[in-house]
Length: 447
Image 1 (tube, rainbow, N blue to C red):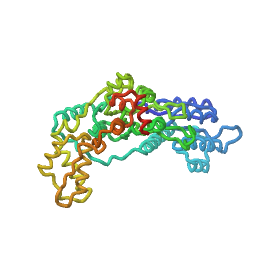
Image 2: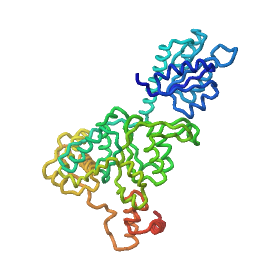
Image 3: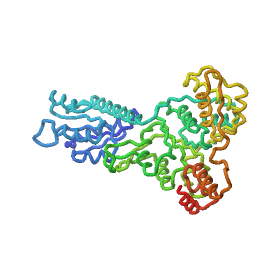
Image 4: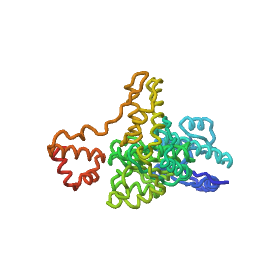
């Protein structure tokens, strides 16, 4: 029989009990540890990940009332509230067993035990532990409520979808490249739904919106007391994705010193919460996305070469909407039906003239911009006729109102910073300036 992946801790002051229990349980579980001194329990649990504890109830000679076991059970529960604990004693009193179960024990075993009963009790405790962990994993994980339009008539997009169908069944790292609004999130979720992990968590982490100060605590979690506001243990977003998929979006925005931490995580598939020394093994699949040119970023030493080669086992380039005009009509119809239902305007239709107008627009914001355009049009149209409100080709801030050099310089700096989401290096490069020169101008214009 194949051993179950689980770590069992046995605590008893009798070395013979420890030996016999360990030998028997080692037949069924991958790791069995023993402690003869209960004072070492908390240190052990803070350093090791355990699935179930077998705990003796009497450690002091002359004391046979089971209070030692109840005390240490409460100490363990304070550290690991959901860890199953099986209490053991040679003194079988019904009242003691009832008190133990009321105080949170998962089961009560009498010595000498029946081996089959011992295995059944521990095996059930492990199953309970896994269910508890699964419930914790699903906390803070968004429930998927959107269904997306994935049909395509575009040869470029059909090739991408074909590649996705082949890579989804594997656990290979996937890097999705494409402009903002091309649907990288949707495709990452689609890869997850086609994989064997589809019934497990899909966790989206937008690295572009995550401050450097919160990077480690949000991704890796922390132990109670690790810092001032750490009032309880917190499982990070990556730990919440156990057995599922982690989608790391905007990975091109990650600073170099944080790229090192991410590389270690991806390579070793282990993480430690802030403030604790024990390592937790991870079983997750990684998908990455960015609108950055990572090869250029590597050449400019803004992105680690070893991280780039680690994340792009399979690299998929998502075409922009202007490169797949065959799909504009289908996507527009999909968004129209979605917003007709949402805003209770069932009679609106897209005629050929409106579709032609959609096709001849460049869509710099891609599918996201088309989505917003159709929603805005539905909202502001009457009940019968759809009035298509197309985006303006240029934003008002781009319009030249005079030829004052300083005013135009400020407008261009704002535009570059907005385009590159505050990335000083990229904005400076776009403007043909050094970083220092751009900083001086930002200070001049109080930006």
